Length: 197
View (cartoon, one colour):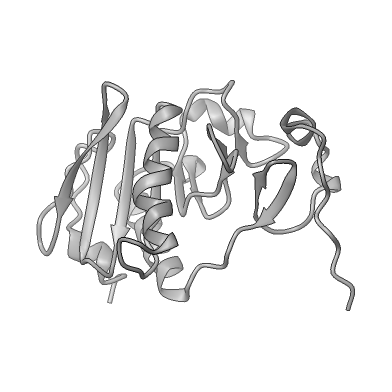
């Protein structure tokens, strides 16, 4: 079996305007001209994101604005793109994403981004990526709310953007999640962390 090499781009602008048929299949982040494959999610992490997706659908969130694992988001820094575990779009994105599932910085930011944290201590790449790097990158593009679902620490952290940085509130056990984006959401931390079991 021959594996196709991911293309190299002279600039980020060239990448943004590339025809989808010229891009490799799968999820790739843009790192300094190269497309670097996004690591596979564990089955449990994917299940958590999918359970949240279903909970939002059951709560009346339009399915057209929910993108589990599939929406590329342009950010500031390196890498220049990210694939959140769940993206909640604005209504306007539905028509803007007709060619590629990608939110660029010339569009309004997504309403909410969610990451499921993979195992690791505070020095691990997983922790640094989700708790440090993505927090900065998502705040820099003005995403109003960022959720961290952390099964290792048994917590759902909901960050609300205030004056350019996230103010996080922790939710554990049977605490109802409090979201400014979904004020009527009737969902507890344990319902998400247990992945519907």
